Image (tube, rainbow, N blue to C red; front, side, top):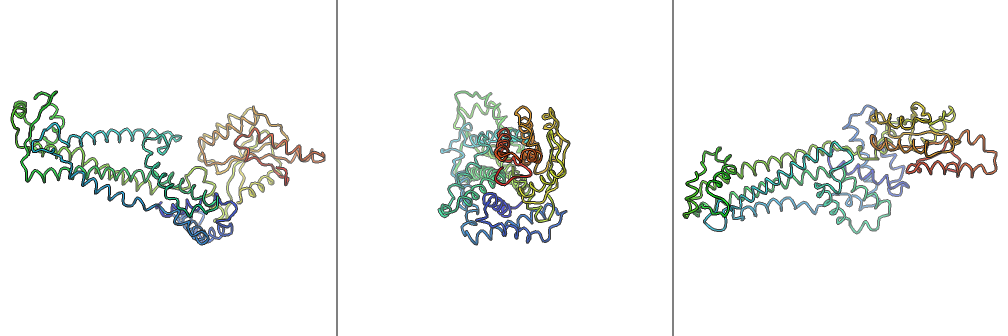
Length: 491
């Protein structure tokens, strides 16, 4: 997905999620944007059609929000402070290479201390780091829990730099924004980095590889330019090398260039003479080192730059905002509203069998809670002692899990941590592993409880206490616990 529609979709998503009261985007405006954008949408729409629908709807919402808060578009636009970084970096690499004294400061060139050797060693170290980074990336892709953008990742510095730049880019006009609007913009920037960060990371690395290639090219160009007007003499001296060991080392370093160009490396006797005399004309050494730099620096760096640029384009094309954690329901609800279809929800009853009246009450309660029509699909009932087996069954077919999963229990049952609590915990953990977007609910059938206790004077207090007991064992799920039928002011 292109950056512009992606930014619009993420901004609309973030504003709608934080603006629950409709102060920034009134609910009727959202509904109208959905209807207008869905006029040509069908139930069998392709992925490009769906992306176009979400992008058009988001653009409409942002225009509406901007009419009330004119600073929103500028706050969501990418910062232009870094647009000069690329040309400055590339021009700096050319200038540094040209003035690098690749042959040394004197006209006598020690073939063991050329700055070109430093360039070569530096680039070989970079290739080793690239290899390690690639292997680490493969391991992370096989482990969905770990992410390249995690703070501990050695390759996460572009994302951390982008986060710092975003914080610096926050304008003073945002200080006057309402808390929901300001939180929405903060969430938008976080989601943008999360989705587009890998693309930016790849582009930054492509730029660095290109700068390294230009530095080497400029260094070679400067070396030849100086060699035209000056005669450089090649010699060598060393505390540790002998002519024999130097010949072997040069064979490793310059051997490929020698084989490719036909320029021979001096034999041991010639090298010994170069150590004892004023040296020889440095032309062949210049050619050998230039070709070596071309083979092991310029060509690989240009190849890596192209590869990273292609990777960035491929990553950008494959971005799908619906794959962000915990936002699948947002898109499902919009699509259900647009097409007038029902949202599928799966339910499983635990040690309980709701009556037809109870099932109808549950469906109506969920529709009111989620704000869209639903279809309720029932899984096999869960018997006492089958808690672990049920949680394990969820992991066998994660692709079949809907946006919502409902555990249904009887409010009349006294909740116990060893059974009810374990079912909730294991189900929550299983969904977190295989389908993080699926939202888990615990719905308590209050029909039999209400019928048997409604006549008691402290009925509402008893009901409230029983609901509190269920919420206590639900742990992090306590905010997703509800009763059906509900009693106003009780739950």
